[in-house]
Length: 440
Ligand code: ATP
Ligand code: MG
Image 1 (tube, rainbow, N blue to C red):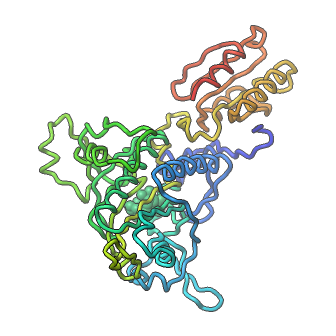
Image 2: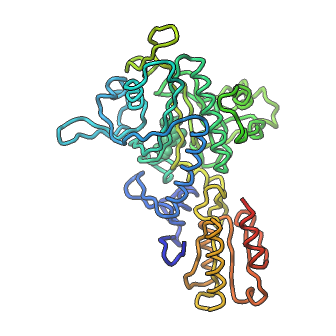
Image 3: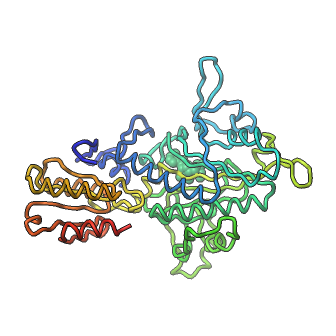
């Protein structure tokens, strides 16, 4: 993408309303624009990161055997009356009436709707296990929307729902999502630790929150340092094999949010292993048995010929919150440092002397070569001071900067800078291209 043809509205001033670094950087780098309290437009750079995150989330859901669907944002109140949650949900639910005066709502989550889909089609245990997921906007009228997309009112969530014949197979479904989450967050370049969590209004007895450690996190967390070094399974993992040893390796090390904190257990750890920190919840996995299937009549015939209410779980990932969480975990004074897997572009190509024939030609050729090789390049082809160009590239945090100016070109060289380390080297054009093609 040529900067001259793009739309990258960066801000010079630090916006006053933003209290935490990710919110400040998202506004300054032109990722989002607030439209109402807790409701945002996604500008081109933000939209690219958001869709890169969705791609990875989707790949790992698919790998773990979940099947993608898309349910609407608007739901009928009647469905929620069946589960009893229409009255329970309270003011967080945005309730709407259509022109026929039918009661509708903007979905804060989808257990009821997916249970309705399930009961309409599935009759036999032979069609199980089944896990249906979607990536869709949710609305929760949060009392205090804040920190930008970290706690929005409208936000993008991946939510998956598993259906099984009995508790034992539902626990295997839970483990598949647990492992998929380990892999997803790892690929997104963040360390998210599964922690024992309170089951809250959804209810149920098995749940973990996946939490990214960050000083600005909303929850206090307590963990055994060993949890930070537990390995994440590779892409050869067999999701239908025995996943219990992997889940056990993570869950047997102490890690809990404040609500579930057990001081005695924590204090029994060697002192150097006790980590007290703050964290951001980026995902949660729940097993809640027949809480919805029972009242809503989601039953299948088992091998015994008898009808059983299905055992369910739900599994959320805060897709839009992750953009902010990743920035909280990966930035410096100059700006964002995107992990390569989700960066909006891999390379920022900086033309230091727009209008100089040799520099323009070298940049155009580099842009062409890299783009043809499948590398996403943001090409700064706009006239401006070198200092301002560098500052903008640092702010928006692309993994690599390729800096091209007349002086270097006289020696046949360009400069390649790695954003994360700040390392720069002057190398030939061919060497720079080779290095960018080689790095993953
Ligand atoms: P929280 O405790 O932060 O309010 P929650 O536990 O109510 O979140 P879940 O129902 O578990 O949220 O939703 C799944 C995921 O969606 C959460 O793990 C979180 O990452 C994300 N999420 C929840 N609420 C918001 C919000 N208001 N803004 C952005 N993301 C959110
Ligand atoms: Mg949660």
